Image (cartoon, rainbow over all chains, first blue to last red; front, side):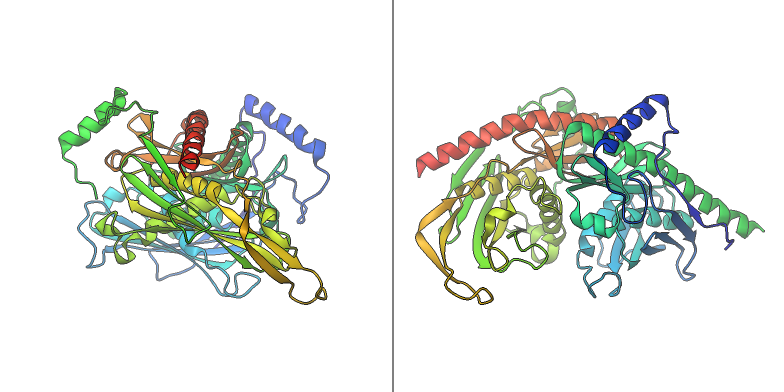
Amino acid sequence: MSAQAGTGTYSPAAASGDKRRERREELRRHLAEDADWPRADGRSFHDCRPAFMQTGPTTAASGSAYAEFGKTKVIVSVFGPRESKKAMMYSDVGRLNCNVSYTTFATPVRGQGADNKEYSSMLHKALEGAVMLHTFPKTTVDVFALVLESGGSDLPIIISCASLALADAGIMMYDLVTSVSVSCFGKNIIIDPTSDEEAWQDGSLMVAFMPARKEITQLTLTGEWSDGKITNAVELCMDACSKLGEILRDRLKDTATLTNE
Amino acid sequence: MVGLSEGEKHFIRGGIAQDIRTDGRRRLQFRALSVETGVIPQANGSARVRLGATEIIASVKAELGKPSILHPDKGKVSIFVDCSPTAEPTFEGRGSEELSAELSVALQRCLLGGKSGAGAAIDLSSLIVVEGKVCWDLYIDGLVVSSDGNLLDALATAIKVALSDTGLPKVNVSLSAASDEEPEVDVSDEEFLQFDTSSVPVIITLTKVGRHYIVDATSEEESQMSSAVSVSVNRNGQICGLTKRGGAGLDPSVIFDMISVARHASQQFIALVDSQIAAAEADE
């Protein structure tokens, strides 16, 4: 893999449209008013961690991807399409089977990642709208995600990485799915939170987005939010998602040129 | 599982497009709601809620426990959902596991608020008895007795009613013991403290069928959905939780529209639930 197949930033910036820029500037000003603390890793509120993504770390899989966003490290393998288990009923559309697991050393306390069932179903919900299930009837595509190290924003990174792995496996999709989450602290919205920030957040919002189709495949929210704040946060996430989509696309192109050579 | 013929599917979709659903309701109209409190004497609070043919029993049990080291000033709340095979044969054994987990997670997301406790339905610090030593552990259980769609909204309503029925026994603590010892507690079985449930939200699920969305979908209507958005709204109109179901992607503007529709519908629904609670309490 070439060395430059490396990091890319996808922080939402004012590059998209004047109206949005205005709104974002307004938001920035709001933030500036009562923002008197820098983030622990020196980022500003709307800076994402550098995204390092790579395809093809595992050779046995049909497709795989590795993602490293700050401390969070995720590896996703995609197997299939292969014959569904015998016990499964006949289905004229394909099945997507998602599983998220944590290594025992992924969290500060050993073996703490017990909530992976929740993440598995969330991953499934975020991806099923993007995968053309009708292209592989009677068969199953397995998506196995392994979190090597949990450093915050785990689920969004798993989702983005899984969609890269699916694309690497050549599974037909309507679009790539990228995902970004934000945390809210009082009035402030910070993007791509680390686990420390997630532990003290007042609320969180996660968007899974198909950048080319401009559709939201999954949206979850906790905490107390007003209407305007949701709109702001979702737009911020979508902007970052579009940029992350570019990075994913570049990674796929990299591999394509490599195999051609 | 819902088995529908092509004709029936067409009828349901056509009805929704014309704002007259198969049971005669409008798109944003709920089914009849009936509420009963105090159905489980063993629990600290309980409720049975019927929304059309969907029936839920919710119970709240309180036990004295120890607060976690990370949050010595907060009690604990856990929410579990169980889907009984009496509701649907597919719920038998492990068949309901996925659905139960999905519902529990959605309820936790809507009721427990952020990590710092902001936007939580239950003020966790009100559950503390002795800081760092004794607190109440609330176990909220929802049981799906009969299932005809819109389980999440019905569960949230049942939990809201059960919480308003909940009385926590008054605890007398003898502070004579040295500070590092376990304090002695005396749980009163006569005096109960009512619970502040004003901030418990309701959940409104908007189910998108074709180009339109409906509230309180029956399971037949749910089988025709492309996606559904569950929004939890509290009395102040603040959104305190949101989950999306169904695979199809949604345009952002549709989601924002759905949120504002849900917010509007929620205020009527909260008023309805409140009046039902008052009526149920008067009956006792």
